[in-house]
Image (cartoon, rainbow, N blue to C red; front, side):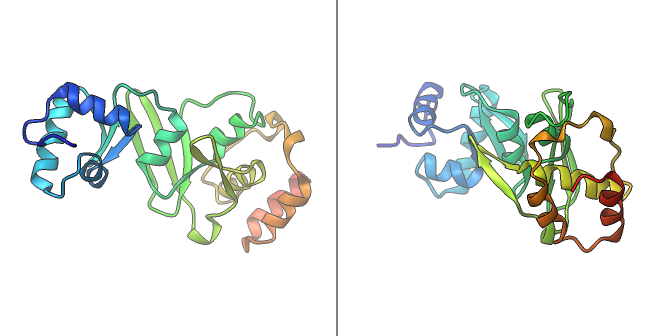
Length: 201
């Protein structure tokens, strides 16, 4: 039985969050986790748990449970939904880009956005929703396939919104047939010209 939320203590809240395996929490999640529909009560509890550092606020209405480890890629997915890890972060994850970038990069059909959280930069780049595909669930986060991560990067380079040293890329993991199949879904001539110039598929 969930205690009265008006009087719930810090230790009790922590036990409930552990028991329900909570990592991330929104306002609506809090209502389900603590079994209440009273929005004012939910807000008061969240404020108390944030003040006592049980929760950390990531964005308005979005919190992390402080006593559970979180992955940067999971956190990026939670910060902005829908989104998936792509571009330099995904290319680095797959070993295509040798260095690991400082910024955690994702694409989203929503507006381009940057969020700074605990000295880390999370970048969400707008991608037309018709190109929002070819991503997979890996562990607990969504990430572009290797071919789609490369294509997302090339698409933005072709639009002069990104810059990358192609000679640094290790393309052994790229399935050229899969890449060509994805390219054929893009009706953007500068992209096709760039891929032809690079001779990568």
